[in-house]
Image 1 (cartoon, rainbow, N blue to C red):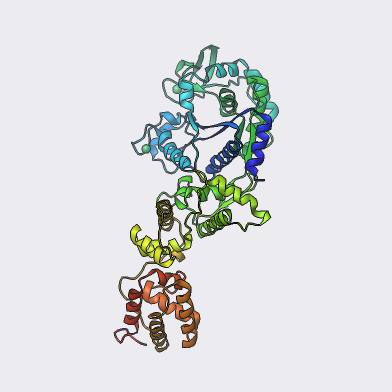
Image 2 (image 1 turned 90 degrees about the horizontal axis):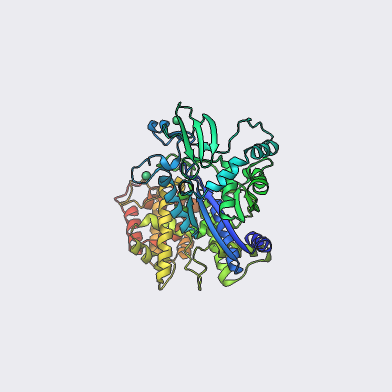
Length: 519
Ligand SMILES: [Zn+2]
Ligand SMILES: [Zn+2]
């Protein structure tokens, strides 16, 4: 059984109604690994839905967290914003409501494409609307108990004046590291590190609970029954352990079923986004492959398995695997040990599976075609010719458009040089040997006759190259040279088949004609 179905069954046995919570602190570009949480939550949510279970999902944006440092992508003016809440810091581009909206909004759009449609909650609003007031009061009333739990679970020292609420100074606008001098609901009196003496109203966005306490407070507020989180939080003495005790002993609610997930590691070098100078972000990952493929690439693994994310050539293997599983899904042929992959495929579809198998054009082919033409209509013509498709349905054309966009993005930002090429607009300056000229003559003659399909062209070139004495490698090189001015390139037979036959014949003829220098 797929892991998401296993968790769904456990949840149904525990609770009549389930609420899955997940979230993010958008303090900067969001790492691809953060999407694992969203994919995991969506997988379990869908598995519950498929069982007709009563389930909802929420997504909490920790917008009231402080900016902890000035990240390398921020200019020096952000130095003075450190320790201010993200929701109150200006956005870097000037077009968003705040810093947290600047980084959060594109990410939220991205998870929507993945099929998540949770109810969104921003913590700065939860505080501002007084929704956390009673829970904050409970935490403050239980401050000694909370301090004791923190000591016992983490094994760390907790100062005797520990206070589970940090006021935001009304003068300097930062979370205060000064002293708390009194509490009487709803006011916390403080002296800020800046010297200002003031009082914070727990019914407003005047301050916040420390994050370990706040996490448990959110479980209480919403009645969370299940939450995926990075495995670091699940370590002994970690924030899940303290959260469980806060839930049981302070807030008095059942802690959620945990789904700790392993990290996502970026594989190999060259994982930097070329224009932004940051590592592959979640948004990049969803631009490199369409959402269902991305979802699948994470859903195929149990949450406790670590994932290597490869934004280089590995992308092609992932899409090939997705296409293979898709074909099993519709046409059968899957082996027993791979059955869970079919379920991963099903859960990966943001809008459910289609009634018929989608048109499959290998990503590797699109990588070539996208480099031959930027026009989508021409691309469709090439595909019809090279893949022998008579008609392309509207939804398939949409799928192809999406894939082509992703391929373009990948080529521009992450693809290794070896897969890149462009058709030389004119015959490159070349010096061909007598043997090469003879080979090209022979290929030319035979290409006028052959069926214009990839494998037939490949076989023909291969035979001519061997007969010419150049060997397969030498023959292929001569052709790459005159078409893309490189000594290696895409799979030759398929590549030539995507080009117009008369163009191919013309270019070859030009190359062996006397105008071209023969050495
Ligand atoms: Zn902005
Ligand atoms: Zn201050």
